[in-house]
Image (cartoon, rainbow, N blue to C red):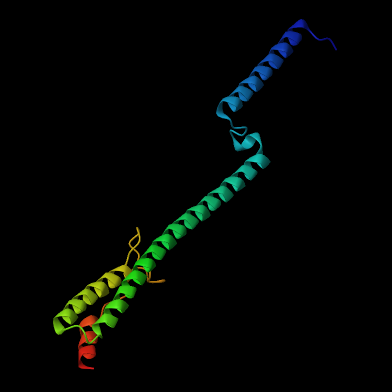
Length: 163
């Protein structure tokens, strides 16, 4: 079998074209920073990449949920601190209202402040988050968890004044 000069030239040209194609592929990989451009380049690697991207997306969701929960807990903690301060003030007012040294006008003033504190605490207990859900509503986030019933402070002070 004889190899002609023409065949040698064609074989050399074919090798050079294949080398140029490989160089172009490598240059594209370098410029994009990606080894896999098409799944057909490495099917096993492409499948692993898809799996890793899916896991990364899931971890990002977990991270987002953790951050949202952390912010919500911080907000709830702040609200509970405010409620604690308000209830301490209510306790102080009711103790002072029971004293024999104050008159009815002072009791009326205390009753007004207690009513304001009750409104304030009711508002705090019905605080909504950024999505519009009530913080202390449990699994019924769309419904207000607390409803103020009647004139609590006025009724309490009236009973104290009689007793």
